Image (cartoon, rainbow, N blue to C red; front, side, top):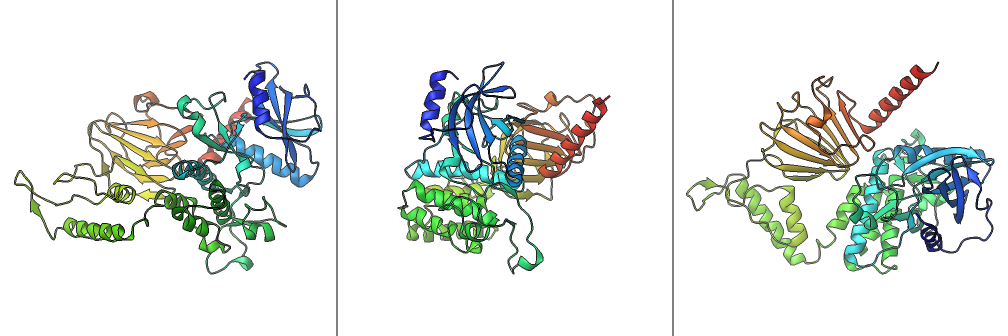
Length: 474
């Protein structure tokens, strides 16, 4: 990134205090300060360049000398180093210099809140993906606001699997300094509705975005992040949301945590289906049609197709059919006989764990796509050759066969954990390239007989690294 680009980026961050603690040219490890970006409650952020390579980065320095602030700063660095998704800034380094802890990360541009129904929906769904990923790892953000949502552009350093054409539209959730683990409440704080929460002394977060229980009692939950997402949606419409958004925002920002959406996935689903109630008369007709389809599929009524074969009048009711009706108001045309494939070609896990007790037989010659966040637990099998493309999800494949006996070739786009739980050891004759297409070990994991959750996987990886480091010590 050239000097003009850095100057433009610094200017885009808005006015900052004229006085900063470190002047241009100050060196932190391998990084040299080039410009001052801004100041937060505990630290300052600078533009920096690598002393040897000349690459640019954002340098965050902790200037508040307090044990609690240092603990938060270290936790932020650890969490950032574990996150490999494009939804978060890429972590570069952590250290201590000039009497202050510091960390370096990807240099990003400040984002702008979008306007218009579709643009707002696209923006919020991207932010929801990031927050849901954070929750799936056992953390809550506690400070979701416009200033902490940056954007990645073509000039930024990004993972190899991020297409250049899509970079300008990728919001990045930054500033994890207040992120905390989700823990179960103590016995005296439990209610009839058990909820996940993190307790701190005093309020924490940003006024106007932090939930009432978070700002008043320091009580942060998953519901607190959902409250902030609701406020963010309201800000996109300058406090005057359209009718389709109003009820979504009202529920997300309820003063009672139990009345909000139960998860980020539920909040995102409400955004996708925001126009469902636009026409109550059409909704009534659609429900009647769906009920009729269900009755026909139960075998109570059949008609002959053009070839004389007996078949269901409307085919199978799948989640894809329902989603099409919700989105377009029309029932998709189907053949008289159902498709031979057991599994829909596109599956969205929506942050949940989906399990199939019986073997799922895929049709040869087709490509199946599974999108997370979420977990699919199934025995996938194809007698010929099929492609399964995975993105931001966990696939626990309980098959006992590997390619070519089970002719599935996998495409791992990003953030994938592929686990063959019933195959304890990879056969020596089997290379990953035989059944994996696009594979990047930095952002994807493949295990044979591995643990069934990402958290357990990361613990296993850290343990393996510790053993490896110990073996290298003299």
